Amino acid sequence: MTLMSVIVFLIIGAAAGWLAGVIVKGRGFGVLGDIVIGIIGAFLGGFLLIAFGLAGLVGAGVISAILVATLGAVILLVIVKIIKKL
Image 1 (cartoon, rainbow, N blue to C red):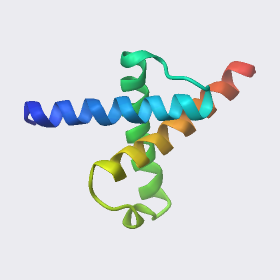
Image 2: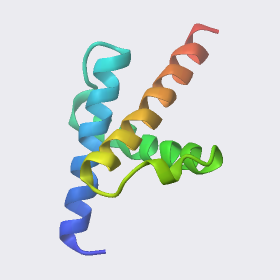
Image 3: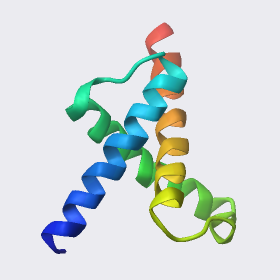
């Protein structure tokens, strides 16, 4: 993995985490929090798309990666929000 790949990975994670924070909470979680949430969301979103057989519907590229990561991060934040209420 090159340095450029790591930088792109972190930018996608930050963008997805921030978008998910805005959708679920109304604001982001700070740069580090957004990156962590976005990266976890990317794994969760990718896993769910593959599990439901929808991975073929998503194209390749940065925008698609941000959308998948944001979807996973939103699901993650909703689950965390539900667990906190219990």
